[in-house]
Image (tube, rainbow, N blue to C red):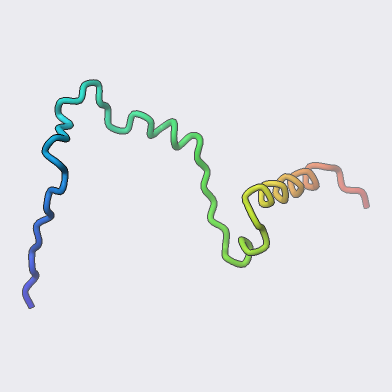
Length: 73
């Protein structure tokens, strides 16, 4: 079997000439974005137990609070 080479068509309109844009910097905000993003994927069974992000955050805060408080035996 031969591989069929396909050329991607340039579907960008000719009036969009990015070479004329001044002051462009690739990845200008990438570091700032990474600093403010912390994505955690939950397993489906765990995600089913929480209706939204607030419920997950509340549960984790409670867990942290219990962990930090001195345990009495």
